[in-house]
Image (cartoon, rainbow, N blue to C red; front, side, top):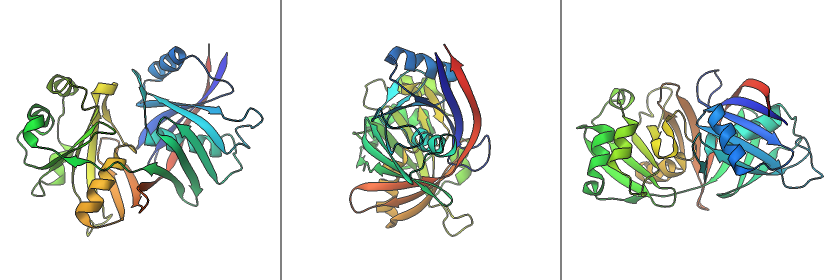
Length: 287
């Protein structure tokens, strides 16, 4: 068996920045165990598998596909950067003729539109609810230590816990955090949290003008730190839109690789997430 594989860096126009995802367009479904083995072998935050919904379509002509995402240890319900990479792979390598592609996923139908300068994803918005900080004392301590915290919120739908650092903190506080994934796992094994977002207010008046910053940790899914996370921004966008009173925002995820996301919170309970993609590798998996 030969399986085509592409590796693309999402949310960046520079190689080796953003978040790398492996993308495998498949002529037929494979066993779940094989998906998981391939994802473990690729050892990236996510490996995406695309299959056709209509057998008469090709990857060049079809406009709707099935899409699944696997980390090295588990299948996930939503992944932004690997969706962006999947659409880019079809547009760039398969020469798909459509301007918009639809993906059937665990999180419903997701659309990705090719734009002049990048790609726009139509994603669900996941507004979080405020939590009592003492409910997550151990997790907050493991994540940010003694740095001042302004807010703790949880998206129960996505199981993403968001910690907002105080506005008194400099961006360097966030970028310099040394977060131990084992400490996070030990701090919460209740199942309530599958991903931890640490965020802070940005400086939109200073170029390049980011409205907020973030970092994302998901050791519960086998990802110590995710470089740039589209799904996290379904929560972050909802939170910061309300706090800042803005529908259109620019965000920067300040991992060591870093990535930029353009966000537009819509009135229909969804969010547009836009970004660029850089292709890195094209190859074949032989089994």
